[in-house]
Length: 178
Picture 1 (tube, rainbow, N blue to C red):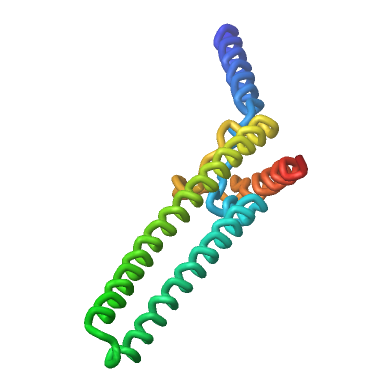
Picture 2: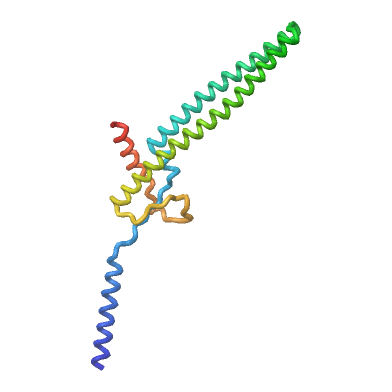
C-alpha cells in the first residue's frame, strides 16, 4: 500500500514537472504579411509606382502625338484628294500606312518597356522587403513570417504587415539619405 502511494505521488510529480516545462516553453511566434499591401503603401513602393506612372504618361504622350500626326495627315489627304495626282495620293497613303505601323510597333515596344521596368523595380523591392522581413524576424524572435497570399485563415493578431511597412520605410529613408 505504501508503495502504491509512493508510485502515485512520483507519477503525479513527474506529470506536473513535464506539464510545467511544456507550458513554460516558448510558443512558436508566427507572423503573416500582406506583401501586396507592403508594395502599395510603403514609401519605396509608392516611389516605384510614381516612377512607372511617369514613364507610362511620357510614353502615352508620345503615342498621342504620333496618333494626332497620323490623323492630321489623313485629314489633309482627304481635303486635297481631288486635286492630287494618283501618284502623290498613293505616296501619301503609303506614308500614312508606314506611320500607322510605326505607331503600332511603338505601342508594343512601350508596353514591353513598362513591363520590364515594373518587373525590375518590383523585383528589387521584393528583395528589400525579404531582407527587412528577415531582420524583423530575427530581431523579434519569429519562427517564421509567411506571405498572406498562401494563408486561408489567420487571426488578425498574427498580421505584422504594419510593422514590416514601418521598418521598411525606415530602411528606405536611411538608404535615400545615403
